[in-house]
Structures are given as C-alpha cells and as structure tokens.
Length: 419
Image (cartoon, rainbow, N blue to C red; front, side, top):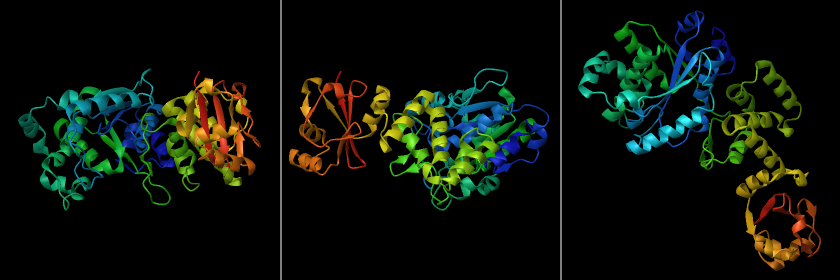
C-alpha cells in the first residue's frame, strides 16, 4: 500500500493528501470511497479521474467503495458550479443511479479479498430525520467553518440556497456512516471536493474519535487551458447511446501532442517506463500519432470492451486510409454506416449505374453532377477509381452488404444494402 502515493504522484493524480495517510498505508490495506452523484444518466470522461483513483487503490491492495449518491443527488453539490443545479425527481435520480452503477462496475474487480463494493447513500439519507440530523450532526459544524470552504465561498456573491449549503453536511455524514458500517478510512475525489472531504474527516473525529484520511486529484485541463472532456458537441459520455464508441475513440485519438503524455499517465495502467518508451517513439514521428492510438485503444477497450475497441480502431483507420476493404467484417461497416453519411438501398435496385448510385446516395447532388465528378476522376467505389458509368453489381458488395463511395479524399457515403 505504501507505493500508492508514489504511483499517483508520478501519474499526476495527486493534488492534496492528509499528512498521516502515508503512515497509515504503511500499516496495511485500507478501504476508501468516492461518491458519484447521479445528476445525469451517464458519467463523462472527466469522471474517469476519480474512477482511476479507485482502480489504483484496488491495484495497491486497498478495497474500493463506489458510493452512488441517490440521496445527495436530491440536493446537488455546489462545488464547481456558478449556479444552482435543477432538482431532479426521485424517479430520475434512481434511474440515473442504476445507470451509473452499471458503468462503474466495468472498472473494478468485484472478486477477491479486496473486492469492490457499490453502495447507494439513498439507503441511509432518505430515511434520516431532519431533527435527528440537525441534533446529532449539524451541531458539529459552525457557520464560520462552512463559510471558509471554497465550494461555499465561491458561490456567496451569486447566491447559494440553504439546500445546497447543507450538502457539505450530508457528504460528511456519508463518511461517518461508511466508517462505522464499512470500516472505511479514506475518502478520495477531485480537488474541488477537498472542503467537503475534510468536513467529513472533522465529523468522524468529533463523533467517533477516530482518525480518517483524505486524498484528492487535480482537476484536469488541456495544455491550451480548455476544460478537459468537452467538444463542440458537449460532454463526451461513457454511455454509447450518448457518445458512440466511434466518437469516443475519436476524442482520444484527436488528443493534442501537448496533452497525450499526461493522458497516458492518468487514464491507462501503463508503467512509467512504458509511457516513456511510447513517448520516445511518438516524438520521433508525431505525425503517425502512435501515442494517441495506444491511448484511444486502451481507454475505449476499458469503457466499451476490447472487441468494440478493435472495431472502432479499424473503422477509424479506414475512414482516413481505406485499404484491405475485403477483409473488413460487417460489424465494422455498421459502425462506419452509423458515423458517416449513409444510404440504405434494397437489393432489388441492383445492378444500378454508377451515376444513379452517386445521385441517389447523395454523394452527388444530381446525375449531371455525378457525370462531372466521374469525368474529373474524383470518384472511387470500394477504394478503386471509377471512370465511367458502368453497372454496379451485387457481387461488388463488401461483407455481402456494403459499398464505400468516396468523392475526393474526404467526402464519403456508406451504402448499406438490405439483406
């Protein structure tokens, strides 16, 4: 366990740590938790930082506890927010909590002596009596102490409701409850959670007279200063129905050269020497984007599975340099048909002329435009240049169902023929 701090430090995953934690880790395994409020139906890539903290804790011999905030999610954490979150219904929270539980279960092992556990604070917070809570927990917090916390202080000028103001107490109560019921001695999270986490340390010490610990990771930004995990389309989600595996893979493979080493350290389990070797190779020829490819495959496999990662990696390569198309399976073509412009056609339409195919698929705006493109030599079908208006036959289909149409170097349409 004593190597955990060093491991997190070289990976850039250590921001704050309580002084006594290293001594405690030297004495043996520890249980630690991180809370995830179900404010959305899916986690996003920014959520992977705390997830990796739990994974490294388990790999070092500790026991990770995932706490889904079915109770705290009804209040809303003011940390990192400039305005109050809209309150969700209990039904929405419970549905989101179940989705998060399924996603988080992919990253940790639930077998062995330090098997991960998933808990939901709705089990103890929703039934908590207000009077009991104020009497037994609230009395241990002074207004002055709470006002000093960054999550509160940053919101005072724009407004902070009593509901959000009380969030800190609920998170502190979670730590107390887990310490009593799960022998949990460590709470982890992002650096924006430090105030809430240390409030829990104070509560456990005051009520149970016990020493517990805290660790936080820095909030991740790009080298440009932009917020990590954002694209023009918004958040990059782990749920494949919100962000497709192909788009997820593209997010990582498009990482800037200035960011890729940091991302390899924080989001993979590659060793320090392995990351060093990858970056040395990458820096010899950055245009090949070898570091980005390794990063994208690794993270996509962890989130969506190895088979999906291999398919989207193959599909991504085809999108930029189609080759060996006859060896591509139908699953990969389906991925491309979902991501690129596509046209569904009935088998009875074949054979059909190239001009008709280009016009009806939308690759050309009209038959006249299709003929002009053919004369200019800018059209290819399945990777081969097409010069005339001959017939396109069913035996030309790839994986028995698909045609790849391309105009120039970047304009594509995938034709999917009904089986």
